[in-house]
Image (tube, rainbow, N blue to C red; front, side, top):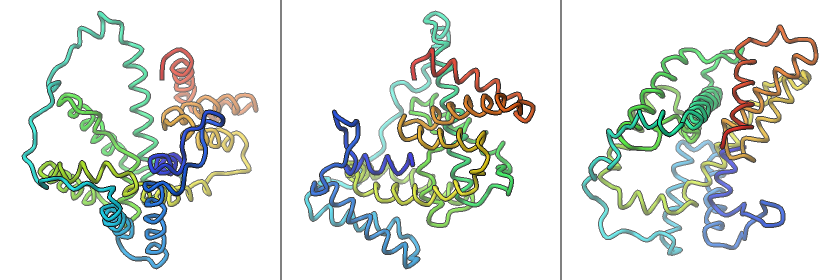
Length: 294
């Protein structure tokens, strides 16, 4: 729901509304119309099981964008990578104590931890890598890789190089192993030399929005594994599903679910069925959501 909402919003299919917060955008707007065309092309290819249908759909959208005048080709397609960020290797650990940034770090910790966990579980479930009881084998290595990447990225002055839900696009076209990630990493490294054309493509949301919408559809099937007859399980799950897109945050949705689940279990006299760590996280999320900015 969240990743589909991102695609709908970035393409202008869903827009802000003073009266209802959200409403349907103008479907005749060039960017929105191109998104719909790209979506139709991708869905047709998907229905015929054409390999690489997401990439082909993006390619078709890019070509049409060029003819529509939405794609302003750069004067040069290649350029040498720029140097490290001005904030690389700059850390002020003492400033954490002198400026009282404990709340900020605590908030970021919870957001990063559960954004990553939610993303990895969602992508792993989509890829069929989880066990029948919903466990994620070898999750320690995956989380360690994410932690190292986030730390290294921060030290080098970038935004967190964490697991992103858009990775599910790779799963949608058949990616199942670490080779997919390695290939993407190599290709991403090469884009450093093609930054002018990458910047132009990234400026046209209609190229990527159809893929996000379709990937959201592919991921929603996992809700069928929820036991809809168990109220103490299904209502927290419902809150998570609804609040992730509405709050624009995976961590907030998961946080509310962590609060609701142990409360409902305890009220029904089933508090022993809940692992103690759930109670701890319920308290932490309650404090974070109520008292800290998010």
